[in-house]
Every structure is written in C-alpha cells, then in structure tokens.
Image (cartoon, rainbow, N blue to C red; front, side, top):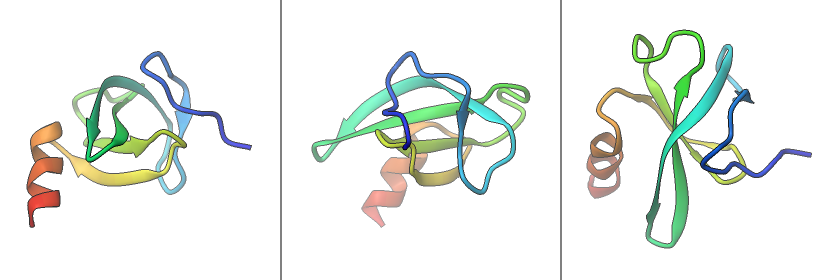
Length: 75
C-alpha cells in the first residue's frame, strides 16, 4: 500500500524513476493537490516530477516548476 504524499514527504520512490525524491512545493489545481518533487541525490541537476497525493507521476521532465504544468494543462 502506497503512503499519502504530504508537504513533508521525502524518500519517495516513483515507479519508472531511479532513486528517491522529496517534496519541495505543493499546489491545488482544479481541486487536485499536486506535489513538485526533486531528486534527493541530483537536486536541480535532474528534472523534477509532479506527483498526485498517492505518488502517481502526473508529469515528468519538469525543468521550470509549476510553469511547465500550467503550459501542459492549457495545451
């Protein structure tokens, strides 16, 4: 069973991605809580991910934070 993601979550394993991740920002879009996560080893040298509250990857290859997600949902 997967843990619920929160603002203080770290050591998150994401299916299809190597290593572990930690939450560094959160926002609500259209009633859905999302979390911007950064790789615990590579930090800003690796693309970020956006996860939902159950840890499912909503978006990968995030280099510009929430701006990337906003462009994605508007397209």
